[in-house]
Image 1 (cartoon, rainbow, N blue to C red):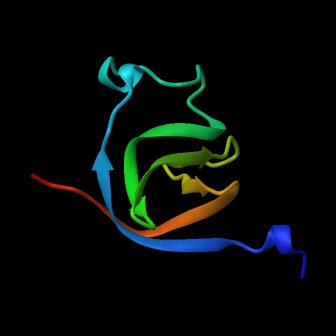
Image 2 (cartoon, one colour):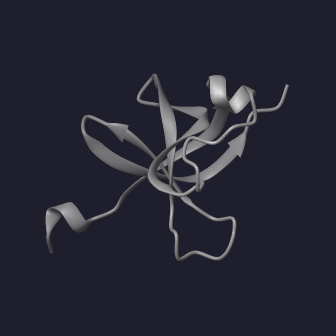
Length: 87
């Protein structure tokens, strides 16, 4: 199997709220709201470090669903089993 096609997952648990300026204004990163590396307003811990969570939204998708991931050492690691942090 091609090494680049293997999906690697992290069971990272908690998403922490770290919005960027356009999140605070209620704006989107792209005009359409779709893209392959949309910056979310969350970060998550992985290997004792905080990583920004990105989301891949498909234009052909007809729902509010995207695939969330982080980038660690140049590799895309997909998030699963996540919850948002509550105060």
